[in-house]
Image (tube, rainbow, N blue to C red; front, side, top):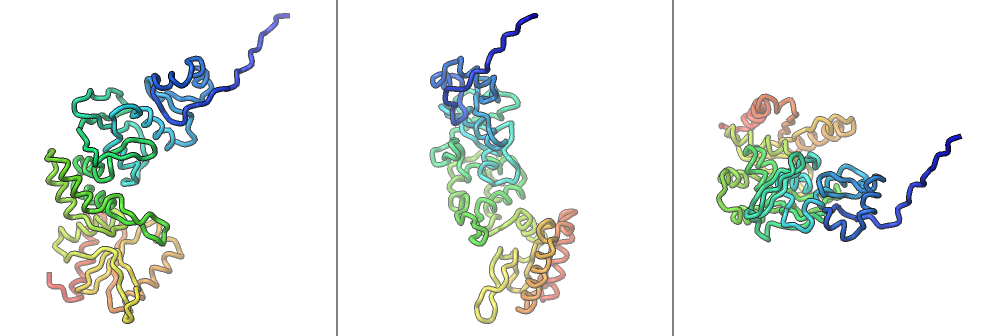
Length: 318
């Protein structure tokens, strides 16, 4: 009878790196034999040539560890759309290919499919750290992304940077970047192509905006020649107590505008709250205009027309 030899799998008796790193750095911490053992066992992953990351528990951790491996011990910075996702400026998750900026005089990173390489001398004031990653500040990130997108989206992102979290939702009250920080970053950025549009976007941005659709509706109103609305300003009752906080409001004509998000405002409990809010608004002598995503189709013409009708009923002659 033939005999078979069974070899017991060697248990790991060495520490794994806590962050992603490059092969030369990893070999300074672990013998090659241990590295090969960890890779075979699936405890170290190789997302790219000479890049090693500990096996992550989530896709988000995988992306951060890969960026750590790309940037550790280098002058590289996470930037542009990848930085925007990490800062929470955009709703999409971090994904490859990653945007990475290197000094202007250095060689461009060549990792097709993994890295979108940029070269720029980023001032120290526009650099920071996040989750162990060297990254462009929110203000610089906004400029880099705004230079590549339409003006409307640049305003949406500027509004997101300037937004302060709400205490009632346990959000951070600090903005990603206030208007003075955005202005200062613009001055440092110089005069690349498209910078005039970015400056206009900052001029059109406002504090207090809670959603991209509020920004889009506000700009639609501006382009249609409607009065400039205030953003998330409280309407007070006869005793000076806060009563209603519309998304947008035109105080001169007592018109309150609410954007009703489809997913959130179709819940029965929220629909009941919306009805009570409208009753409070009208009891204070205001007209409430409710806008949905259906009104925003076809360039928002129906939304603009609905607001225009309410304004004219209130005496506006535009």
